[in-house]
Length: 107
Image (cartoon, rainbow, N blue to C red; front, side, top):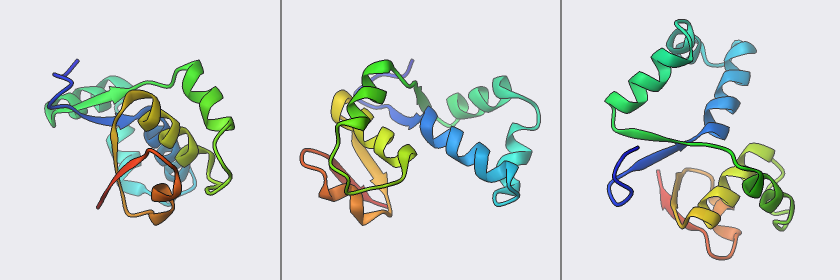
């Protein structure tokens, strides 16, 4: 995995959410990216210096205990991951900053 101090992580939750949207025809570019399977996607992420942040049981449980500022389960999971892993979230979603302790970098 990438050096933690220099890593840019992408949550498996974000990739999962994009896959659902792609299956519904909303993200055709993502469908093309995943057409060759997960190994090709992971290799592309590594080549672009991204590290995959997996979903752990602790992340899922922490997401259920967050205040209900955000109703999107994928976003809640990413917020929990950021809190538990001391990471900054890069997002355009202003709701993320309503969670105490979450560092947000506006995209």
